[in-house]
Length: 265
Ligand SMILES: CC(C)(COP(=O)(O)OP(=O)(O)OC[C@H]1O[C@@H](n2cnc3c(N)ncnc32)[C@H](O)[C@@H]1OP(=O)(O)O)[C@@H](O)C(=O)NCCC(=O)NCCS
Image (tube, rainbow, N blue to C red; front, side, top):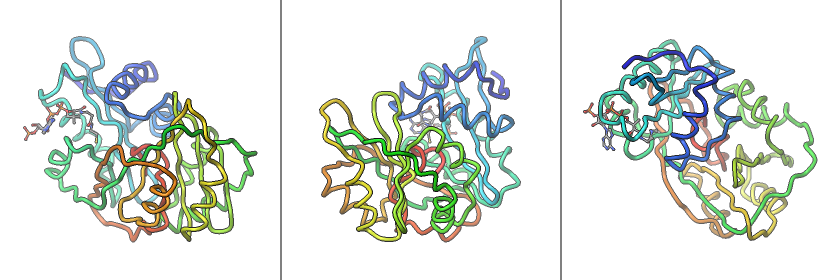
């Protein structure tokens, strides 16, 4: 087995492995990671094929590890750990590293000094779709709100994410959403106030039998819990946001939805 830098041609196999896990991932997201940080994405090769991978992403003051996956047939052989070590080495110069851990990987990450920050609930609402408004191009405003929530300049990622998402804004709140394969995902979704957050969700949701919506929400945002329950969403899974290093004072109460399904905050 050896590790090498990820190549664009590896993305189909990475996506197959992600979909086998039921992840809400698409080519746009994987290409975004790879293009933004080609030196920070790695694949694991054995039997002359790609059997696993990992992606890292950096902001000015923090880094994220995402999409660590190993083909089911090749698990428990040390490949996952080797990929994880490589990802960590790549991020050795940033003061803070985040990741969203699946329950099966929490122990592995704890071994490397990661500590739990929060549960992240995946909420689903069946029988609805999201209506696409005109993009109102308020990216600067959105980046300002986002910075106050995450205490980080995430423009490098959000600027790209919004090439593929619709955006609704209000004074003190905004909600992004986009299609991923056969469903919609909400996120990022941030608001200074519960009513503003609810207002944006109400404006964008439309009944439809064919579609469903997913959104990943930090569990300590109890306002989000109230809103989503009232709007007919149910929790369908939970991951664990973990951090190693200096934990910034993230304002979880204002974060109603992560930017992507768990993989980069
Ligand atoms: C998590 C995953 C990447 C681990 O890959 P792997 O190649 O099997 O991992 P390794 O063989 O390197 O094992 C690393 C450690 O994790 C432990 N581990 C692996 N799978 C485990 C499981 N299902 N339950 C509990 N522990 C597990 C191993 O026992 C090992 O511990 P040890 O070093 O103390 O012996 C792989 O199971 C996977 O792709 N899972 C689905 C996707 C996923 O959940 N990714 C993590 C997203 S955060």
